[in-house]
Length: 122
Image 1 (tube, rainbow, N blue to C red):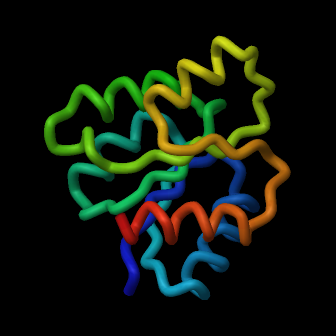
Image 2 (image 1 turned 60 degrees about the vertical axis):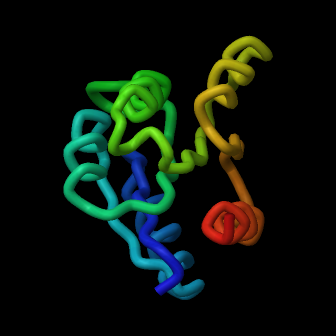
């Protein structure tokens, strides 16, 4: 396995499609659908990268980024924001200050896999 990816998205179809594509590319996958599940799952599993939607039940993606970056055990995990939310330039800058990449939905899985491969190889 190349690494373990945590997919955080409240859309089951996105999670299913991404999980399938990532497994085909040699990654192990964990997933959750609610914002409040991210930190406990990331602490329990050895996660190499987090793919994070911004619009989630309970806790939004920006708050999750803040929580991840303030946790000494999790702060170095690369984050890829994958969202349909239209961000203002200021919101996008804020998101990218905490994340390694921002990809807008709909997206091409090849682009996402390329970003993941680069992050894992660093």
